[in-house]
Length: 189
Length: 189
Image 1 (cartoon, each protein chain N blue to C red):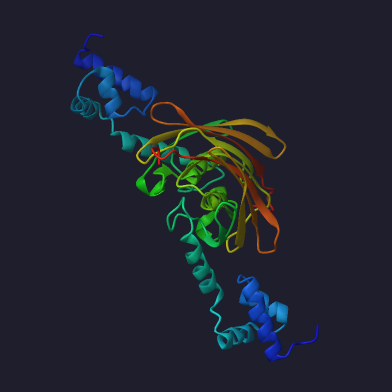
Image 2 (cartoon, chains in turn yellow, orange):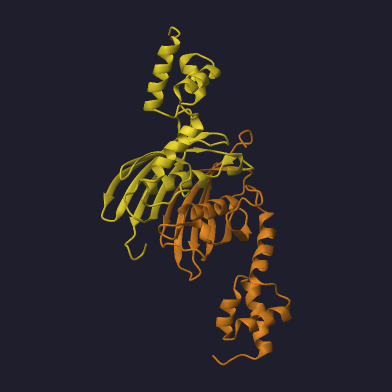
């Protein structure tokens, strides 16, 4: 690929982040074959905030749509949400999430990301987790960026079936789970 | 039941707490049909510490036996442990563990109690959670005492199969789960 002109690169960068705001500066620098510093200057020139700020802004606007949770109850940042259909969240793993003996992130953090995202996509006032079948495929270390995607598979009566997949930064699937939630009657909620 | 004499009651109380140290003062007061204050005075006279102190003492002596975790990584207090066989932990639920919309304890706290207890009973230097199939039977509110029991069901090669059941204070089963852990090779651990 020939190296693009600055104006060409900037308009393509703008387009890319409009379609997928979750490219990091590092990923953009590799794609355009320019330095990270150049990507930063491009963003500044275009008035595009840095990665973390973009994730935060998008998460905040999405959390408002959720009916089953209140702000802060989601494990991870909610970066996309279509209520009753799909949701995507990002969790950056940290050193305080691991089992020291193995150096591996505790299963209940993955479970928490998946469970709370699955709840967030459900279009109901209050639900209770009934069944979960989960599988962890690859051990997760601290400092990884996990992208979870939850899809409502079906709804039967008061039961909501949600499938969740979690990928790592390298787009490999590291976790998958099937969840069944029971919608609570108003008197129970 | 006729009301017991003080000396009779005290020797029976001592015997009961030797067999099961997890009776609360409230439960003992109901059993003996005396006031909680009387139970407290009996304990003082017999030199038996209060419930929380007993749980803490027992948990500390058990945590030392665990090979897969370090102190503080268990969700709940480890009140009984036979490495490679069974383990029991107690978790008291609090207001910061619930989903506000439903008032129900988050599934990942139950999952965390079960997962970490299952890991604790495994006789191996380091393990990774592979599969978990769980079911929550009754919604849990804040302020409940959950008693989890984990049993190693079998071991095949490097795979450890552990079953976990959680009961509430009323001895009703509120959660059950089957977990499969993979033992990590020394180089991975």
